[in-house]
Length: 244
Image 1 (cartoon, rainbow, N blue to C red):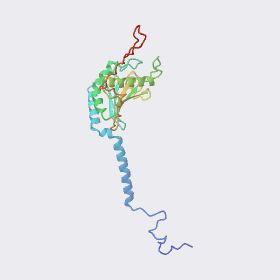
Image 2 (image 1 turned 90 degrees about the vertical axis):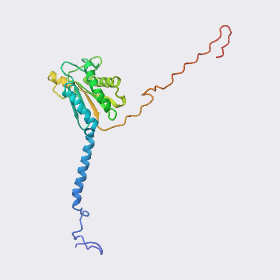
Image 3 (image 1 turned 45 degrees about the vertical axis):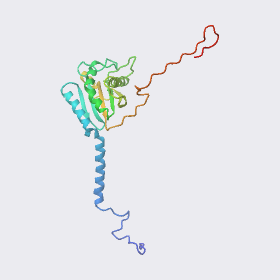
Image 4 (image 1 turned 180 degrees about the vertical axis):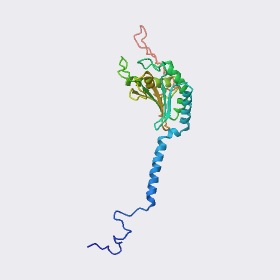
């Protein structure tokens, strides 16, 4: 026997009553879909904010123009991480001495063209220098593997950008991937040359540089250290110490 609704309550058989709650109005489904699509839209905008940054777009266009003219060899692209400028070795010109992290005049000439662009971008963006090698094994007194070699090479390029081309140290870092991110086959000399590359990642989104500390930046106005006062010396033949 079904229970009767108490006085003043709506009977459960009434079509207005829902067993799991009040039914949503028809427009709410479309509204929920719209909110989901808006969230996805803004997530994509955030991920691709580097592509929408005018300075980054101009930098990519300048580098692409130099590559089209043959002034440098490599690739430039913008993705969710930021702007990536990849410099590849061309012909017999090597960026580094064989089995070493010592930079050559070839990569220095490339950095001379690229440095003004990187210096401008470093005002608002962090820059990561990535080192990549081919799969040719290495083991010498300095490096046990291509991992150590690629990291040392990336660090050498970062130091060159800091010491010679004025990139702020607080805006640049170095990382090595060794042979594990190839972009071509290592079966041919041409493919290995493409894999021996240096990549500059201008990170997505503007960041604020950390404050410089007194230890990191020496003060030019610091007064010179005071000379130590001479210690009092005994007076010869007097047997007492002289008063300063």
